[in-house]
Length: 319
Ligand SMILES: Nc1ncnc2c1ncn2[C@@H]1O[C@H](COP(=O)(O)OP(=O)(O)OP(=O)(O)O)[C@@H](O)[C@H]1O
Ligand code: SF4
Ligand SMILES: [Mg+2]
Image (cartoon, rainbow, N blue to C red):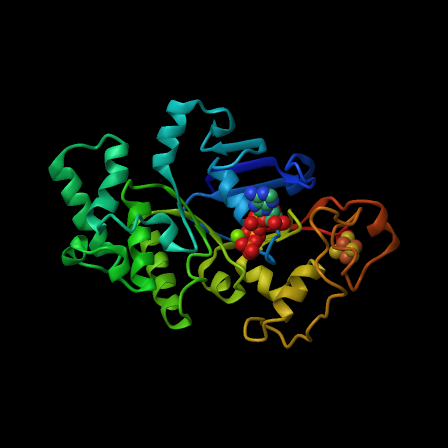
């Protein structure tokens, strides 16, 4: 399988101000040694509890925030791209947010919102601009009449369609969709999910799909990566993950949603709460909540081990 993106040893540290002068004298290690490939043409789901670092990873891959480590796009290392190369990369890789309001200017009608990225990237031919805009607006299920309207005149679902159109107007190859339906009514979510799935096929996109909704991720993803406290603890093809979750944390996540697991599985109760990301446990970061914790888990950090060609897990139970 051709890899579109290879993330190698990626780390993100956020400065946290903890004194009254606002100086940062502490760092939150939001991504720790993340290694992940995204294959061309796949939807890779990224799941985990709130605060585990999903959005951080999505932004770091697009180089919207500072990170340490390497990110390859095709065979180019984008970690050291200069401004000119970054601008070209920005055309190929786009982000869709949870809240479409944040990506749409309320003072711009839809036409202007869709034209803006084209102009920024020096596409000036009026015919080309109009044909691209007319094409994309239909692809997202709206029509030419809607181009004259403003964001506040649309429903939440329609606004997300506009935000998707804006993300796709430059004909990107890669899309990070960060909880694109979580802010929408449940009744609308399925429509937008179906739209994304169809657009992915039609436009030959590769997608990193961030969500805490396992049902949605199961429906959409070819493969799934599970995060806990800034680390990827399991990666598998989607079927394998739901039929045979290996990491105790993944097992607990899946067992908590009765409608999605394949076997009749008892709910696995986790001990305690999510530890503070500023002060995570040493050894395996999951050791404070794991029902299977062993002595070694508190002393050492497990390596990521391959279970099969398409499944790896970071846990001593599989060493
Ligand atoms: N700009 C920032 N400055 C400091 N800490 C941050 C910043 N952004 C995120 N964090 C912290 O980094 C950690 C990871 O945050 P992130 O937003 O990536 O998590 P997430 O998995 O996307 O969560 P959610 O499901 O709530 O969107 C959290 O502990 C969060 O509080
Ligand atoms: S390494 Fe130990 S504590 Fe961590 S998930 Fe595996 S069994 Fe649980
Ligand atoms: Mg997030």
